[in-house]
Image 1 (cartoon, rainbow, N blue to C red):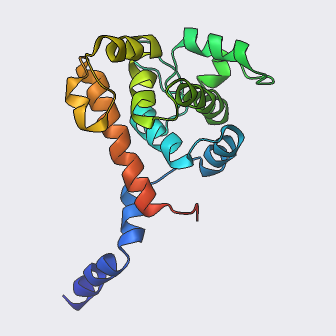
Image 2: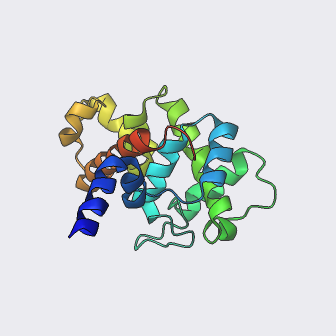
Length: 179
């Protein structure tokens, strides 16, 4: 009984440690490298990865999105034409964490640029596509604010943004540095 009480006490004292066990971040080096390269918050990249693939580098969605950051192949093809990604191919982005994180981080940076640094709109665009989000904003379907996520007409996108924002908040609390 005493051992149990000690373990419970340690868990409460070391709640950050417990939090990192519940909300781990894999591929921190690759995430940080791309966060630096593209000036994107590493915890936002990690939250997108957590929701998209739960850190599985070769994940494939039922809709055909590939890799750790679940990019559609046609989007990956477009991304590859926008910048110099060395030897990265669509195939590699769907198989290797470093390649998928590089393309996904670049795309997240591009969406943040298109939506003037607004992570809520950018996350909605990551899921539904930037054209669809711009349409919602233009026709007044959604005003782009976090407190009106319920106005997003796609349930999948609404839940996606909520989940990513949840994990980003957890990562902000637990990973103020990458130690």
